[in-house]
Image (spheres, one colour):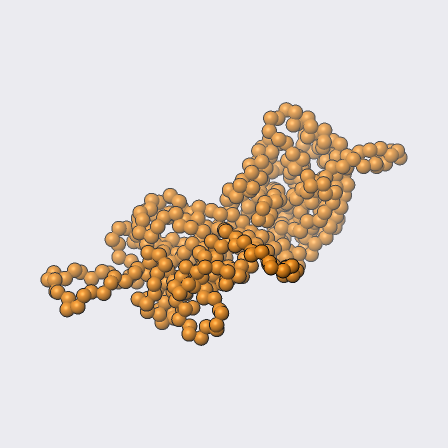
Length: 435
């Protein structure tokens, strides 16, 4: 029996996935467990393995299509296996009959998705000239655009998806060369134009002020914008700030680094200190879900990592049970794979508290937006020498700026203040907490 291939769910709250490319062609033999396709989610690209062995058939999703999670996009069947809804080939005629007229040229094969689109619009696929070895959805859409005799003069023929992509990329359709029927512009033409920008001709006169242009956004950036907007507009944030004497933290980092060949960062130390402090303040480690406060049994620290296309928050799991070397190794691995685009969906889920450190950029203080359903996020600034009063005398000390953002539905001001006070004490005397 044929095995259905679904668009997989690769993360929490995921509704759709984008098929980046098939790693096997339709009609090709596949083996269970080998890479079958590459799918993009809002945060990462993932290779999906074949769920069974057989022949890839009935492919209905093309590269670049955004598909709802759980939708069947192909079948894997045994060689020669009849498929539901597919008419079997007629048995060959035993006695050949000479045709009265020459036979018509063989029609081009039609993809299942193209056949459905053509049927929906009452199009005879025999009238469509394919741009490749078979008729695809883009060919049908281009034919529909060309068939419309009421197209205004000067309007560019293009498939709906090509128009949308061109609009998102800020491309003028009239400047592109179409490869579809009648010169219609297809999705592939827009993608090619994005990869090879068309140089603007030199102006004959002084150019006018450039009109504002929409900036193309990656999937990651769009989802980040949506989720942060939702967090900011639905989560009742409040903020607490604190400056902490970081002399002991600086000494700890220097001493530990001297014993290690790999790089040890202040973020590594703070992950440990925050994780151990959360043991004493489980409410700050809790979450808000469906109108209920959920207590998290484990402590999983998310570390915000800036990448070219947006922001990722990979998770260091069971951070309160790890030694300093294990924390540093986990953080280095996650940051490296974040920047290389090699994170898996499991790396990005399950965090119970987040740390965002901008100290390396010279920032003293900032307030971060909470990453739901978590109850809090710690924003860390730089360590800078400042004149402070010690025992009534002015002295220069390395001071660290901390800002804690909290969800008031889960954590009140007093609980948050006690957590931040204990964290400050741990930073000023880390050995006492870790003993």
